[in-house]
Amino acid sequence: IPVARVLGSAYLGFIIGMIFTYVNGPDGQKIYFFSLIVAQICTLINIWHQHIFAGNLTVLDDAIIVSVLTALLLIGFLRIKSRL
Image 1 (cartoon, rainbow, N blue to C red):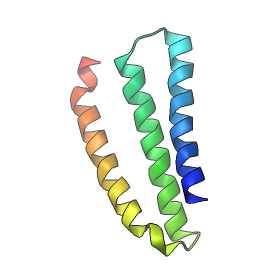
Image 2: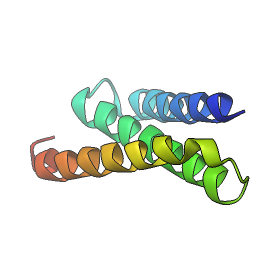
Image 3: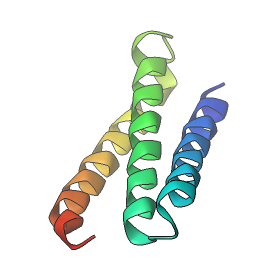
Image 4: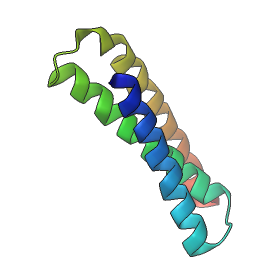
């Protein structure tokens, strides 16, 4: 189940990117980064939900790694946001 939830989060980010592409046109970079952030934040929420509420103790390492990667992605996005 953890893998299915994470893949579902990635697919949600892909769908958001496709919707923005259809609405705004093939802008490219802005849509790509926005959909990547949506997928990453959904993955972060899913992993921590599995650890805290579902009682799956084996995903703690994954939750920490995903938290660090999400923080790095958000810092990078905020630094280049004005150029997109």
